[in-house]
Image (cartoon, rainbow, N blue to C red):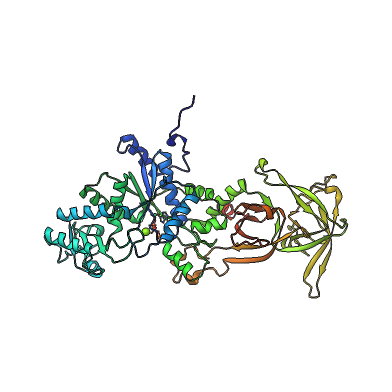
Length: 565
Ligand code: ATP
Ligand code: MG
């Protein structure tokens, strides 16, 4: 007999324990909540980035772990900056990341009628008023952390007057910025967010979903908690910058006839070295052409990472391992790469490609078609099987794998030295061919036919094993390699962000030699080029001209950093 397991029984607890999980556990145990409802509330004014992925994995992860649900709510309260393009992209990126919000995306704009009705209720209760002050004037009277604010001269309008003005705001009688609706709380509050915060502003703008139905729009502070309540959200998880807004969140929930009492919890946002995680800054990079688009493989957007070839599983793994804390911190970019390698090492088929080719002629190998050799697809996955790799008299090896005067510790090829060609034979370098200017053009070698498959029957050892590609069988490909978008660890601190972009963040290798099996691998499958790194086919590829993105090199700088530290 089996019984249907609840989602909380089947969901794996991912990664280290953290305070949000503790809170949810306690709330369930004490009966404060009967189930868990979270939400992910992006503002559709840009594409999602890896910082969002942290919030996504936390919100969807907690809901899954405790058998609850997580809503996707597009926080579309600012029609000026928002576009349908972003709404579609956000949903597509979430799906790619592996999350499901039950089919229907919610929008804050779905609640405009209800939010307005509640606002009228606040006016009727004498808890909100219409102000004529401009944004600047409101700021000027708001006071500081040490000084209390001053009441607006319009603060004491009668309920009737306020109701009339608020309705006329809605009816479109006033130009942008002429009036606001403000909560009447306390201009002397120690918390500036409680000094009569603005709830509605006049904005004559067409909204992507509600069109021209509205010319007043709610602020984030007003819309957010009430939307949570409408959706029955139990744990409204957001980033630390909203901690000071929590008293306002609670004030609104407690002063409105909302159907539920959600609570807000704050965690530290993700900061990552050598990049920026702000939609505004990422937008600048796109608009100034510093990158080719939101999906440029160098971008920390989910789009960019996906095009780069980073698997969604690696992003989830990263999000889980960095944990959730209350204190701000910065995560080393190398840790993301570490997570990518961990996933790809298990899953990526191995292939051979020579990114900086040097021709080798094996003089004692018979002329003709050559032969096929067995190569292992993935030593980490026996099920991945083997493939046939063509070998012939002329091959390419990596230029870096040869030195004319090698130092002692160089175990690769040099004049008179013997090395192993992976899955093939031992070869010995017999001659070095140069052009008239003394540049290296080609190597001449001999091979030992007894070493077929890569082992010597007489037990003769070689120190180096090289990857290679048969020259007549090789296909040509373009490879794009990437460095950090910014050399500065904290580019946001740079005076001129655009000037701080690493000019060498993209290098293009136009003529990389790849083994023919790569021609038939499905697009979007990540592969390991042996001894080099992980690569993925880019959508810029055309028939006969594949383009590969380097996802991450094999060398693990993270482990080195760890050892040093
Ligand atoms: P940006 O500064 O890039 O515009 P944002 O916070 O304004 O980011 P939203 O679309 O409002 O972007 O964010 C949706 C959710 O994602 C919010 O709950 C926000 O707290 C969370 N989030 C945004 N950036 C990060 C980050 N770097 N780390 C963790 N969570 C983040
Ligand atoms: Mg925001």
